[in-house]
Image (cartoon, rainbow, N blue to C red; front, side):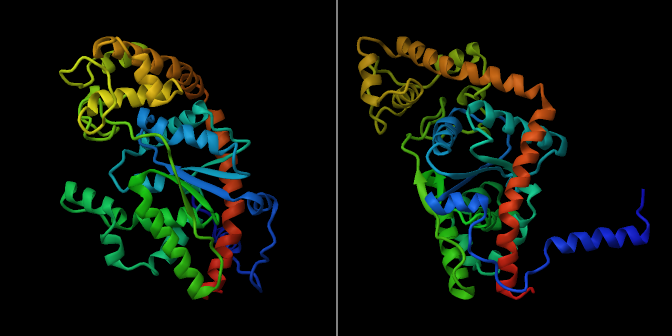
Length: 365
């Protein structure tokens, strides 16, 4: 139903008030959340809602996220749905994927009392800061980023959103004055862009943003079970290539049984000459929380067929409670929405004063 004209203007005025600029620059005195960050840094990271995470996501990112929420006083984890629409998305499926990702993060051990878990698109300050930073970014700088080269080549022609999404990624990080960002090696150059944009903004408008530092995961990258020269991926067309964290024990055992190895029966770790077997050793060591050397030692006397059973047992033991918790959480949609709503409010409380400061510095008010 259409709003009466007066009501419409009240609605517009209340929206404008959100972005009303202060008469002077905001005090640098930390608020309740910033007080913690001032004492030990702030961590930010995001994950796209493109379905349930796979084993590579879990070992390469999510396990580390759980650890970081116990090491840093201020931690934010975002479900970055704005990033996800650089590829075509079905709206109904995207809504489901957002809640599935929330359930997955909670089941893996993210604690919404210790970390702010939120939905990116619900905090509009991300998009506005992205536009401001895009005006400080050159096109040649974006063209040289590896993911644009790779993805635009795959699609022959990429969207503007795909081209500029590293700027949005930088905005995600800088909006919360993040000091540390857990990243994989393939994202280091994108973090360097955030680092550079913090410096450019500070030089142009006065010191505001810290220059964020990378927290590289110590876990080796998990490879495709069908092509160990490529990393494990949700988009892999081969269903046997990827283990998702909701796979049943039978599905996990089947995928590992069919994993590509080689014609040598002994289990050794040599990623260059034996990538398939080495990938299984990496998975086994990570899931059983042991070193690669200990995993190889356990495999002594086993051929690769028998070793695959040992690897499958370790994966099943680790993922079964996570899968069961995801199933439980999926059945309580209202709880997932409430967790995200609370996280969205907390994220906005941090983002709004930073953006007001940015707006004044660039001359909007």
